Image (tube, rainbow, N blue to C red):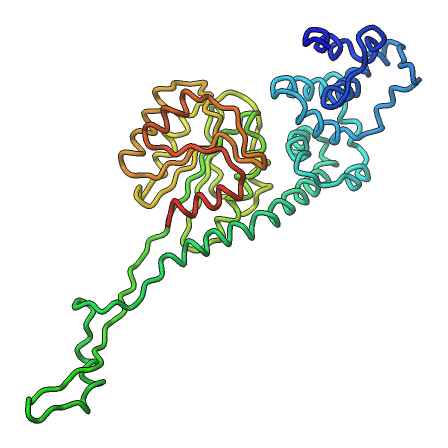
Length: 368
């Protein structure tokens, strides 16, 4: 099947199967997702499939949204989600709390749950929050042991032995320890066991500043960043600050202990102004040499690229540790603006798409 025929087959749906053929694998799943939603259009016009059914209740709305989100490009998925809510009233399927109670709390459903929450009837919001919390708890259970291991190993590298140095010499303790070694002939104490003070170097805490792009393409990254921020907030010696941005900037530092609360403040979608977000992040830097700024974005700048690069250059100049992540998800793969990402790297920002577990290791290495 040629690419043109494939596209026409997906656009025309099941009714073109006799002339254009069936679809298998991923294309078959895309066809099913499209039919689940837009088959309602045919049903409203009195058309029925050859199998005599266009029953929209075989899967739940949230299941459909989770599947569709993984199958279609972001712009296509957002259009389909808008049609589901506004054109076909799909939120009617969510009126029964028992439906949500039966849904497996999978991570791929979380963006759909958050999107529905803002528009759901008040009576349904508690059930949606409960389902979202179950998903977050599962992510937390998976990530927390890895983060704890990464940072406990990093802290062990701070251990120091009691090195014998003149600056650390403790004369009084040495005298007490060696009084029995007085030599009458030499009229002096033979100090066979000198004592030294242990000097503990005071270490100021590190600040981890997460700057998160909340445009539609970064949904998984926002979810993982919110969970990681909650875990990092509980670690000693680490202060966490977090801002979310599209064409505006939201500081969510005061709610990091509750990832769900953080995520419910997100309005996924919209444009991207990285430069504006980094300029705001600059105002949060107190001790540059002990600050890690992690920019999690696809680097598709909707504002001024020069403004973004200028902010990165200023941060690098004052010795802020800069990390750039085009993706923070379980695949570790990302589609990003390689030109701007490359220019950011040339200014001193380390760039790498990765899983949350690997990011925990990377972050621990950065502040070692």
